[in-house]
Length: 74
Image 1 (tube, helix red, strand yellow):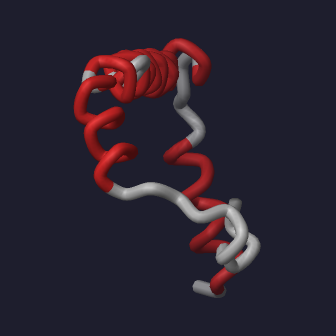
Image 2 (cartoon, rainbow, N blue to C red):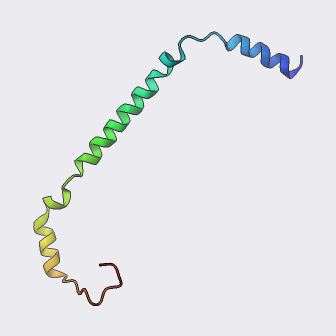
Image 3 (cartoon, rainbow, N blue to C red):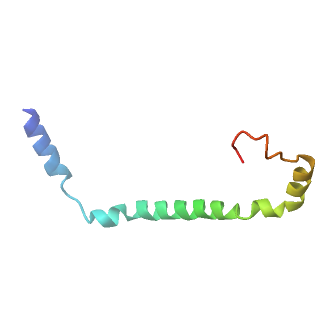
């Protein structure tokens, strides 16, 4: 048997498919659920800096920023 004959016979055997969209629909559902979960994690970090405003104010008072001596970061 040649390679082409083997490939032809194998493709005939595998050709019995149903609806490919219905078979692979679950992958889209899984991806959608994963993106929803990642979106929930992202939204859980909203406004975190403002939850600790008293700590940020205390840090700013303890570490004053000299705008004249910066390295171009401010």
